[in-house]
Amino acid sequence: MNQMRAAFDILAILSGNDDDIIITDVNQIMDFLQEHFDGELDEDDEMENLGELPQSEIAERFKKAADSFKAESTDEETEVMLEYIRGNIVNDNDIPDSKYNLMLELSAAWEFDIDEIIEERFSEIDEYDVEKDTEWDDDFLEEEDDDDADDLFEDEDEYDGDFEEEEMEEDFDDR
Image 1 (cartoon, rainbow, N blue to C red):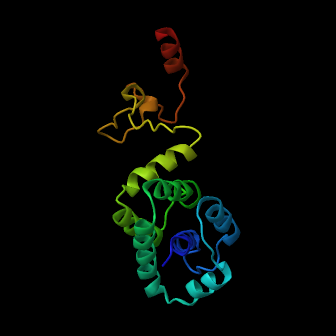
Image 2 (cartoon, rainbow, N blue to C red):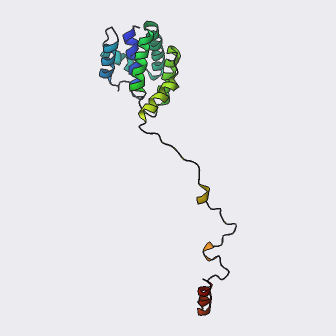
Image 3 (cartoon, rainbow, N blue to C red):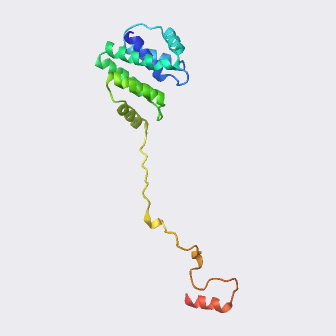
C-alpha cells in the first residue's frame, strides 16, 4: 500500500460515521493529502473499496494502513498527519469506543500517546474552565433535630388553639 492510499484509508476510516464509513468528507481529506503528500489516488474507488468491507475487517485494514504509512513516511510527515487527526478527527468531547480503539492501534503503530493528544485537543476546545466547587459551607448546613417537633414553637407555651388574652399580654410583656 503506498503512502497516499494508506493516509487516505486512515483518515477516511477515522473520520467516517461509526455506522457507515461512506459518510465522511472525502473532499476535505483529499485537499489535505494533495497539499502535503505526493501520489495519485482515485478517492471514489478507494471509498467504494472501504465501503464494501465488512465491519469486522475495517480494523485490520486500518492497522495495515497505519503500518504502511509509518514505513513509507518521515517523522515530519507522520507529525503532519497527527496534526490533521488532532484538529479534524479528535474534535468532539466524546470519542466513541470504536474510534478510540482505532486511535490506540494508530498510537501503537506510530509510537505516540493518544491520550495526550486527546487531552490536548479537548483543552483547546474548551473556551473556559469549569471549576466545580464540591465543598459545602458548614455555616449554611443545619443538623437535623433528633425529634420531629416543629421548631416554630420551640417555646414552652405552644399555641394550643385557644387564644387567651392574658397569655398574649404575658408574651407581649416578655418582649
